[in-house]
Amino acid sequence: MTTPPERDRWYGYWRSDRRFHVKHDDRSTIGPASVIVVANQKGGVGKTTTAVSVAAALAQQSIRVLLVDSDPQANCTSGIGIRLREGQPSIYDVLRTGTAVQKVVEQTDVDNLWLLPSSIDLAGAEIELVSALSREQQLRRALDDVRDDFDIIIVDCPPSLGLLTINAMSAADGVIVPIQCEYFALEGLGALTRNAELIRQTLNRDLKITGFALTMYDGRTKLSHEVAEEVRRHFGDLVFRTRIPRSVRLAEAPSYGQPITVFDPGSRGAVAYHRLASELWERVLATDTTTRST
Ligand SMILES: Nc1ncnc2c1ncn2[C@@H]1O[C@H](COP(=O)(O)OP(=O)(O)OP(=O)(O)O)[C@@H](O)[C@H]1O
Ligand SMILES: [Mg+2]
Image (tube, rainbow, N blue to C red; front, top):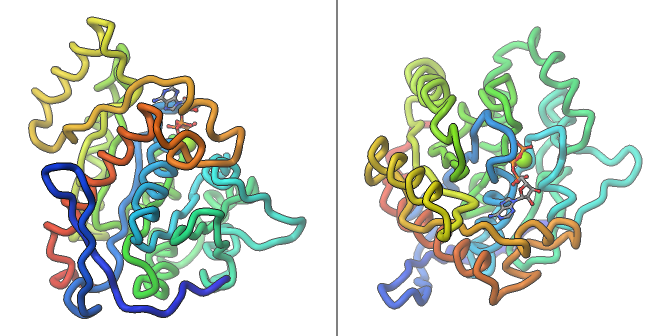
């Protein structure tokens, strides 16, 4: 791992004019990094795009971010431009053999952004973990070692409610649920929120839903409006105000190995993800991390 530079902790907030205001403070007042998981068992709803874009947007504001790719598809890893060499350790080694996160983390091309990469090996971990002791807590145990090195840890999950997602939720302070503005948008969300509640009752009493993020919103269609309204009726203020537009530039960015905020900083997608990141950071700061149990 390229160690994050030793320096005092910074934190910031977004002013009403949408400019980010960074404040310098003593480390002890903000506590260890919050862990925010991006989850929805439905495939292709924008989990990875949201994890990568929000992570990059925060990093560009001097917030030290660890992005954790907990999906065997490894889309976060390739989307941020990291290619693992043959035999290079990944999150699989962290979960299976307890390899220290510090030994696996990679620095990305974005300042303040580090990645815990994934590889296809991770597909086996879900099965192999079944017999492991405290199998649901492996990621939490691993991340606890590096919480003090970062300001926020963002975890991208696979499209399932299996052991990898349970591990992520067990380690998390909050969950972001991307919802694609399409037909059946709410389908499966009951199972997701019930699962989160079960994990809160059994494995991680600190777990909260941080917010629902509307993705691939097309303002020209009635359907997008209707879905957005329905989601807001169901989840009220838990829905982030920012809607992520459907945009070709967002779909193109991963093939260049760059987050949208680097690939095309002025694009609608980049601006929207900066706004979503600001809302997320406000919510993270509003949660009193100092009272979190370990
Ligand atoms: N706002 C958007 N506008 C246009 N395309 C998008 C947008 N968000 C994501 N995409 C594209 O849609 C596809 C699915 O997005 P993404 O990979 O982020 O979803 P996911 O939920 O992580 O998928 P999976 O469940 O397979 O992990 C990708 O090709 C991505 O580039
Ligand atoms: Mg994904």
